[in-house]
Image (tube, rainbow, N blue to C red):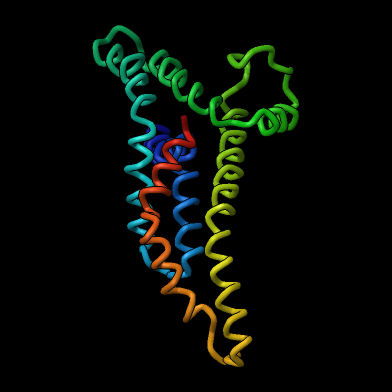
Length: 200
């Protein structure tokens, strides 16, 4: 029962400890900024976020495989040692993406001894700090994504007001212009390139 419980929690833990959170939130911001409601569908956004996360995490997962999975399969180390070795590359990745302020916050909240080095920071403190940092970064990117589309909405709304067409919803007019702008600047490529670059 304990093993089954751990297996049920493992996918959620892996999603929280990887780039998946930031990517999915940013893609959600893109859809909301465009105002296309449910296009692309949630399943498509989750699929894109999942495979893009695998692309971003590939070097880290390769290190996990070399340090933990291969020695475990060769019966050179036991399961406990494999988990400890496998956590090291994941912790390195999370430390690179975690802001010092968020890490300090959760160290204070844990009421534990102040760590001298990163190796002294417990994983149960690092993971929530990493998640908060990812949320903060995703919202910063989302704000920058919203700006050009907000300008289009304001221009369309002001134009309709000046023409006395107050009963016509501005979204109905601005949506084609936002989609056109997104297509002309090759928006998906820019967004995905920026997301991948944000992890390096």
